[in-house]
Length: 591
Ligand SMILES: Nc1ncnc2c1ncn2[C@@H]1O[C@H](COP(=O)(O)OP(=O)(O)OP(=O)(O)O)[C@@H](O)[C@H]1O
Image (tube, rainbow, N blue to C red):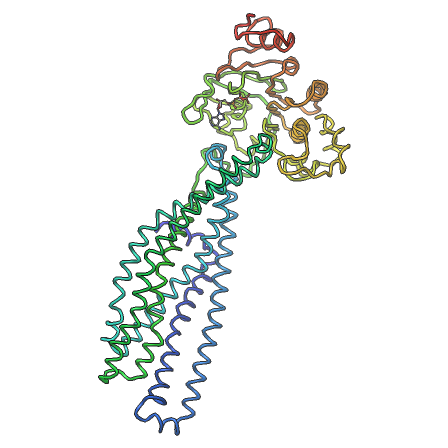
């Protein structure tokens, strides 16, 4: 089976330990029959045998040896069980440690498309609950299966050596138990898959609610969110109960059959003792080992239960394990070059699934040029810049950096040549200094301050209680939108890359601050091609060239003056922003 093969592969380094644990389980479980055998000897020799009284008088030594043997074997089994469990724990923990690292790297290595498609809560469930279920199975469920099976077989073999007929009577109940367990397993499997899905939905809702709590509060939607959570919670609880009830439906049958072993033993065993076919000691051995036959049967439902959960979780983990990103980063340790910063879009078409977002876009940016991109919301600006670091691949055409198709470039090298401040600013829970130096952990504090000053962030940072050592909360909590943008800009500048991409980075800052940032960008001390997405004409006017996107197509291209003279989209925006209130400008630029 594929999943088991996968587990085996991942057990590498711990296989020997795990196999030792399995073997010890078999040995330890086989020893279960020793004490019933000794009991049988004691009963037949010293209690119920024909010469019991005589033996008791003459063979005390043997009796003491047998009693000590029983105690010794009990201690041996306990010690063995302790040692065996330890081996299971160590090997399964080690295996999970390795898988967790691998999965984490795998998730890190996925492309943007993967993150578009997968919910955070679902990925978190896979990395925590599902992994732990698999570990639990390796350490406990497989152990239980092996031990139950060994004890069952050892008992049956021992019974057969005593009396075949009575053993067959004992096993008469096994087929119906197997049939009941099989029907149960078939019925419950889809339920566990569903249960696992509902848990993931519950986690996703919880995660979204916690990370989006500020929006929830802003819209006073707590009750709605509580209702949404309650719905998922109820769904999960209902699915859980449904699965448990299915188990309960079958439990009475399994339990009745398991109890039936005692009845069969009493009737058939008692009859054979009276007939003299078996001794009383042998009857005692059957009686003291009956649990070894009935318990595995009784537990079969629970084991099937756990195995279903195990497979439901394992298949989710294997999904991540084998997910292959369309844009893979091999992290080849090639010598990384510094690019000149020439960018070319050659008849680029791009789509998300089937929706075309960019169509036949062509332009060239020379090294050191500053290009502004403008266009209505949803016109494809962010999608366009995402193609340069190859977050997505084009559907047709080519994106070239320094004359080479980005698909031919080593990804780390390509991305290592781009500094980026994204529209949705994400800061880490770290100090402000740590956030600015995120792309270059060796950045001296003085340099971090210098870049913060260029990004017009220094003044507000020094006013904070602990200055650059102030820890900002998750996603930059505690800072205003404009402050976050400026720290993100400082972070992008600090890596000193030859290509700088700013996606609406100054949208939340005032005009005076923006003017300061524009000056800084113009006077950067390192050579750099700049691509700036902006909505304000005050920003775009400073660029060497402006590209206008509309519905995924490049409709205008030129300098500020050229585009004004053209009296198209750019002119309209210019007029709207400059003449402002009260003036209505249509798309055609007419009032
Ligand atoms: N991950 C995605 N999956 C599917 N469609 C997407 C995705 N990201 C964006 N889109 C769609 O692509 C189109 C272009 O989006 P894009 O973000 O590039 O526009 P934009 O010009 O940057 O907009 P804005 O100015 O609002 O940031 C939109 O119609 C958007 O709905």
